[in-house]
Image (cartoon, rainbow, N blue to C red; front, side, top):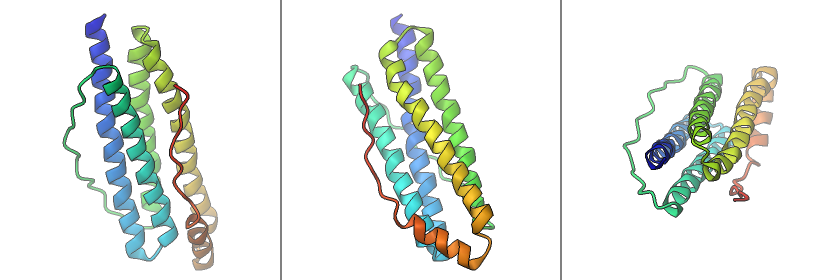
Length: 172
C-alpha cells in the first residue's frame, strides 16, 4: 500500500509542475495581449497566472503535510505563436482540458488505493477544472460573438480589466 501511495504522491508532485507550467503559459498569453494593447485580456490572464500558482502551492502544502518530499522539475518553454486574438483563447481551452485529464489521472490513482484524503483534495480540483473549462469556453464565445468588431473588442477588453484574483479556499 505504501508503494501505491508513493505513486499517487508522485502524480501530485508532477501536477505541481503542470500548474506551474500553466502559470508560465498564461503569462505568455498576458504578454501577447499586453503587446497588442489589450490590457483587459492581459489582466484576465495575469489573474489566471495567480490562480495557477495558488493551485501549485495547495498541492505542495498537501504533499509536505503528508511527509512527502516535493521535487521541483524544469518548466518547459511555451512554444505557441499566435496569429489572432482568438488563438490564445483557444489554446487556453485546450490547455485546461489537458489539466483536467491530468487531475483525473491523479484522482483515479488515489481512488484506486482508497486514499480518501487525496480524493477529498482532488474533489476540489475536479470542481475547479469544471469552472476553468467553462471560463475558457466563455472567453471564446464572447470573443466570437462580440470581439470581431473594434467596438466589441474594446468593450470586452474593458470588462476584463475588472477581474481580480481571489485566493482559493478549500474545506479540507
